[in-house]
Amino acid sequence: MSVCKEIADIDGMTAVERALKRGGDIVGAIVLLIVLSPVFIYIYVRQKMTASGPAIYSQERIGKGGNPFRIYKFRTMVVDAEKDGVPQLEQVDDPRLTSFGRSLRKHHLDELPQIWNVLKGDMSFVGYRPERKYFIDQIMQQNPDYALLYCTCPGVTSMATIENGYTDTMEKMLRRLDMDLYYLRHRSLWLDAKIVFNTLCKI
Image (cartoon, rainbow, N blue to C red; front, side, top):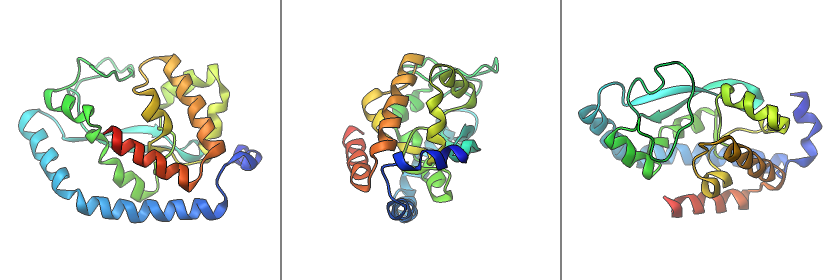
């Protein structure tokens, strides 16, 4: 956490704003889990009817403080999508997608279970997208400033999610990092609100 102390002056949010952001995450997550419960049930049942394997899957990602956590998603790919054990980048028209999974991915509905991650405190509604260590190690070889992101919680959506799309190449990953670092330096509750609004418009 020493790195976080050193860069405290570049965080666009004050301590009060960070507390309000967390409070908003908790309230928003509770409300959304209740309001969207019929959608969760529909997607879960549809998944079980159209594909084999679990409807929800978890995967290890790296979050605040460089600590690992389990991120949750509705499964969009076949069960053995990485059967060789080597992590692969997701693509927009990935051949590993199931028919229903392709529809979920198109509208970003596969991300809905991450509301639970927000409630737990693993994530925020707005922040950098959490990545797997396998890819983080490659990114940091190109730009070690990725470590600065560890001072905040990753998010369900971000500026890069809206503007950069799926990060299916290292070039896009580095571009996403630049956007995430810009967000860190300029973030505010107002900017968060705009990002959420733009995300909803895009969906």
